[in-house]
Image (cartoon, rainbow, N blue to C red):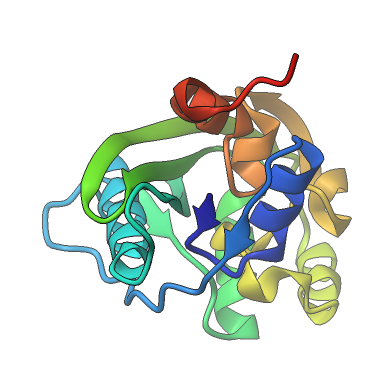
Amino acid sequence: MILASKSPRREELLRRAGFNFETRASHVEEIRYAGESAEEFTCRIAREKAQAVAVSAEPGDLILGADTVVVVDGKILGKPASPDEATRMLGQLAGCTHRVITGVCVIVGPDRVEALKSEVTLVTFVPLDEQEIREYVQTGEPMDKAGAYAIQGLASKFVSRIEGSYSNVVGLPIHLVYEILEPFLVRRP
């Protein structure tokens, strides 16, 4: 299997779940189309990432692409481009429940889309004051994360409730990946 990503969080999740894979960066531009829902957007980007890697894969290789966004009050939050943007995003999440959506695509090389699905998890943040947000942003942790936080890191103290897949919030819904890949897994006696 090939993970069409260089995300260390996705790599770690897959390794901990016992999957054997290699990684290849996909270099897909993540631009949302007008009128595209968050689910449609993440699924399209996941498919584009998998397709970008599939062109150089061997026939029969499994290619896994994924994309994660955070949605609050109908607004999609991707990765912040600056500390100021991270601060704004965290201010929007403070004291609210938001959705974390990951699109997952599996392609059987070279071009057969085997599965294209999305997973939604609800996450509730405690109220945060400006100083808490500022101190967290200064750690640098929010800068390469959808929604400007890492649930598995320092931001774990901001989460009061989660409904759904924890691994989805980290960046890859492992149970969904397993469900998709299970027919392809080789069982050892």
